[in-house]
Image (cartoon, rainbow, N blue to C red; front, top):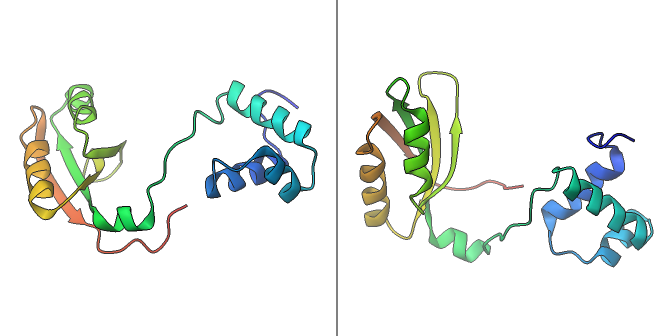
Length: 146
């Protein structure tokens, strides 16, 4: 198997880790019907090759439900994408930024504690140098999140 080749076992292991990144190796081994040594070596290889870049905290459903989430679509001035990206990265309420095709250049996934904070965050994004315009959509409900 090459360093970047993933097989079905790797896919199943990653699926289990998406459900619970803190699952003990023994639990993963039992669930997949393999030895702990096999799982440990697979994890080490996936980390070494960069398939697994790290492990993250997932907030509880209660905490997530307490936050307001929105998608902010941005139109960016030509040649300003890297400056806008750097500015957005400094805003703690911006959780994800993606470049996209279509009528907008980027989509930011943002979160705030309340409507007032969200309004301020969206205003702050719109005022960034290089941002021509924004269009925002508040998330009403998350149907599922993998």
